[in-house]
Amino acid sequence: MSEKEFLYNLERKLWKSAEKLRSSLDPSIYKHVVLGLIFLKYVSDAFESRRKELENEFRNPDSELYLGDDEELIKEELEVKDYYTEKNIFWVPEIARWKYIQENIRLSIGAKLPDGREFKSAGKLIDDALTAIEKENPKLKRVLNKDYARLQIDTKLADLVDLISTIPFEHESLKAKDILGHVYEYFLGQFASKEGKRGGQFYTPKSIVNLIVEIIKPFKGKVYDPAMGSGGFFVSSEKFIEAHGGKIEDISIYGQESNPTTWRLAIMNMVIRGLDFNFGKEPADTFTKDQHPDLRADFVLANPPFNQKEEDWWHPSLENDKRWVYGTPPKGNANFAWMQHMLYHTSPNGVVGLVLANGSLSSTTGGEDEIRKNIIEADLVEAIIALPDKLFTNTQIPASIWILNKNKSQKNKTLFIDARDFGEMIDRKQRILRDSDIKEIVDTFDRFRKGEDVDKKGVYKVATTDDIRKENYILTPGRYVGIKDDETDSIPFNEKMQELTKKLSTELEKNKELEKLLRHNLGELGFKLGDINEYK
Image 1 (cartoon, rainbow, N blue to C red):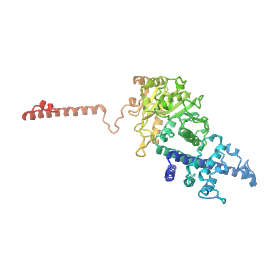
Image 2 (image 1 turned 90 degrees about the vertical axis):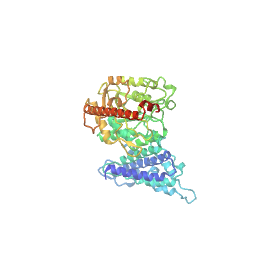
Image 3 (image 1 turned 135 degrees about the vertical axis):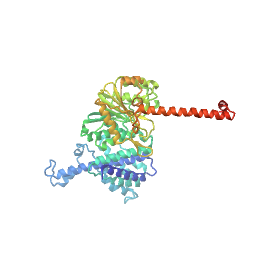
Image 4 (image 1 turned 180 degrees about the vertical axis):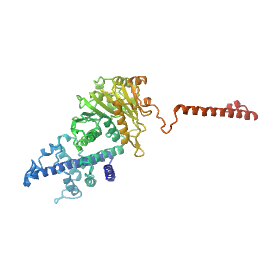
């Protein structure tokens, strides 16, 4: 079975089963129930994998860790925490290990001890497991959602534990962490779809994330997302680096998120993949409580909230903020506040890739046109990509990708890409960018950076800063790329116009004859054409 088929079958199986278990629970609650157990399964599996590795070394005479036949000593050494943490494996206490949970979770349902007391409930069993992991691993402090007992869904929890236990972690081309990581990411996407607008707050569609990462190419340095959601850009960056033979250790991950729930999801997402990260000491507002004030990142990737209103972001302390290098953003819309925050945190040779509502390309409200002009004149805009509709689960607002570069290879030039006709519908409401779409855009962008001619009418156009000045600093790709030629029509334009003009002349002559005939017939009946017009 191919990798794609394997993952597809796994996705459908798990989601179908999980949906049956969801019953009366709201997706916003059930999301944490499922993702928390997937997280618990992963850290436990990673721990057990390291444990087996250690046991083999303890018993291997050729290993530096050989302990002979002393079973008690081997058992004791297998519980030494340092053996796990040195390999970036989370230490999992016995009560949090998946095998222990599986063996004990159904004992709690409807059972009683000899003295009449009840066993620990299934929910309490999970809560205690998560508490134990959090206590032993400082990075997870205040992160895990320990609220299972309160939900009172013990039987469903036991069924869900059995379900997650069936996840196969073996495939010829996939590592166990990649399989579970894929499951985690898939569930995030499904919950985002089910929750609508709220779900989209923590999840950026995978195809958009992949496109930006492929363009930005975060191989080495500091990677930053100031509106990180569940951390999708970091996961995609990891995959990009691995796919191109790089080393994940060569990048440092920085992020910020104001929503406490989403902040926790992002941390769990990183832990599942064994990525080192700095998401600040707490969930906090990016504008008023910047968790990385001194950071200058090499790559900034983000999908900030679109068109935030004054009550959602503005604070009087931001009036003369040092981040507003290109102009104070209007209180009524945070689009250019996000952009300038990112530029402020970008290194002198850094690159920014962000998604914004299309209004940012042409708006003149509140001085946005002046800010856009200043950013263009600073020669920061490397590319603008107009995206197709229906890519997002939570909004129908048209969006574009801005690529900003503090050290462009093509000075005073900007690549405009109209990708509105790209992608394919995967169902009635949802569109995705295909791998072939992403490859075409990325290849074109790479060729542009090399100075090659990439113009294609209706799709790609390289414009100079002077061209943009003539358009009053409006950056809508449609203004530059023109109208796509009809690829099925091979007739030259001049020849076609001559033929159309000839046909039009013939039709006009026919109209004259018809008008003459109509006037004659009406006259025979005693009417003039003017008389008829009076009754219109």
